[in-house]
Image 1 (tube, protein in one colour):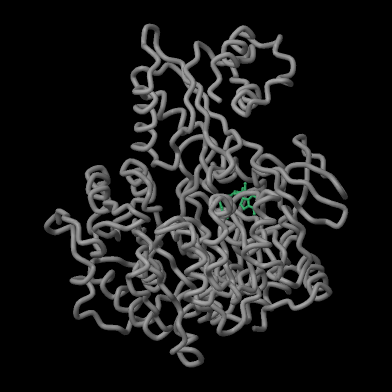
Image 2 (cartoon, rainbow, N blue to C red):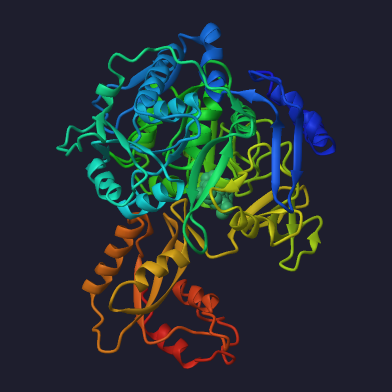
Amino acid sequence: MSLQIKSFEEYREQYKKSVENPSEFWGKVAENFVWKKKWNTVLEWDFDKPEIKWFDGAKLNITENCLDRHLETRGDQTAIIWEANDPSEASVKLTYKELHTKVCQFANALKKQGAKKGDRICIYMPMVPELAIALLACARIGAIHSVVFAGFSASALVNRINDAQCNIVLTSDGGYRGVKKFEVKSIVDEALAETPSVEKSIILKRTGCVVTMQEGRDIWWHDAIADMDTHCEAEEMDAEDMLFILYTSGSTGKPKGMVHTCGGYMVYTAYSFQNVFQYEPNDIYWCTADIGWITGHSYIVYGPLASGATTVMFEGVPSYPDGGRFWEVVAKHKVNQFYTAPTAIRALQKNPIELVTKHDLSSLKTLGSVGEPINEEAWNWYNENIGKGNCPIVDTWWQTETGGIMISSLSGVTPQKATFASLPLPGIQPILITEKGEILEGETKGRLAINHPWPSIARTIYGDHKRYKETYFSAFKGMYFTGDGALRDADGNYRITGRVDDVIIVSGHNLGTAPIENHINEHEAVVESAIVGFPHDIKGNALYGYVILHDGVAHSDTLRKEINNQIAHSIGPIAKLDKIQFVSGLPKTRSGKIMRRILRKIASNDIDQLGDISTLLNPEVVAEIIEGRIG
Ligand code: PRX
């Protein structure tokens, strides 16, 4: 594939070019795609406004790049391999021709239900092939998809649907995940009672569970596509038209609807996919993420399909029917590139090694990691037992906001270093900087910012450009601030050390502390609460909550359960607290700010060096909290 860098020397050359003349560099990369009309300018940008335009004036449809253009060259090649939750259920293989047909057919069904260019369509579905078809069908007609992970609660769904004013919801009756058969439609029903903008809902039958259909609003997927033409002209989109919205937690306030646009996102996800994973024709590539997250958008659907790859979609979980499932699937489909999260690796490494060794993993060429820092033990286990010491590991650092992989080795091409994401991709210019804004050179440690746009940077927060500016472009003038800390070694390799704000990454999922605290505080027994993260050997971090109750309310496990139910109800089970300690007060500064540093140390049982607490408003509370700490 012409986009691929094949040697370290070439990487250095390309990197240099990408920094010296970004427009020329990305203009050349973009020539590898199908455009209905070429751009006027490659890049126009101003990080102060902030405003970023890639390939301005160009016209395209991303689905023509993901589907139509492959029909002649690889129409009969498998585009998607779908592996069911239950290993005894047959896998599904869709060729590029079949996928194209299904996308066009569903795109026509969407139009029939009233969908049109610019509409926001919410997708709340389990990991079935129709989920990928749904994304592509929206893109085909120029509707903006907003996928909400099907583990979020009804109330989280309400917020996201209302924020984007979606008029259509695509969903299923239920879904399977491990031993669980979970309801999906009933959650949507609960949500739709509070979402006046929604006019239609299309429901896929997956589990056959009983559902209530609302006349005039709800229609079955199979009825919606019946008699639909399998030809659908791709809508002409501006490069800067919105492709999708995807919500991510902020450290404060409601989730942020990150907006990605058509042209730059397509170019960068395909470019990074081909380079990081070094995908070769006929390879089988598997990313285990859910399409409800950015990793699934960029590296299950768009990047691989725009590259003509064969991409695996998995409905289940790594532990079902046993902890060898991932390896069984690798062997079954002869997977060549395998991309997962450190939390999965840590969980799987606890299993008897026979669950790995009984499967033939010899097809593997590249292993990937994403979502959180990978600790050395997990890295070594992955390398030795899964890669058999033969597969490069790409530790890919990026974010929902960046749209694509920013810092990572290129498999087998650039050097890897355990626990380091390593070098930036061409076009990515990382900076380490102090809290005060002094740029740091050489081997050092600091806050990670990026000082030049790349094609897949999110363009705004849907409906709140001011917040976009404040969150990402106000900490350091003229730079995008990531919210992460990092260190750089003498060779320029980056190691991400974790968030420097109040976002905690639990099992690879971003959780903001303030929104969870707000939900806890809504409980009638609660006065105030503070949440911090503490190290957890599988999840990476887990949540520890300190909760002040009203006078006279008894401390009880029932109350702990109620608090967690409240969180599960308002956000989703992923945000539940591992430990809840009832306290009489929280350590505060004289200006009333909670000293989270102290709470973090206590939660992590690192109580020897709490630092000076004498300046606190209420130093006496610290001893009480240490005393009542939940170990
Ligand atoms: O803290 C970083 C961490 O995940 C955050 C982004 O989360 P999200 O938007 O949900 O996207 C996750 C998938 C791209 C980052 O700010 N993170 C992601 N990848 C890594 C990582 N931390 C360390 N190493 C990584 N490879």
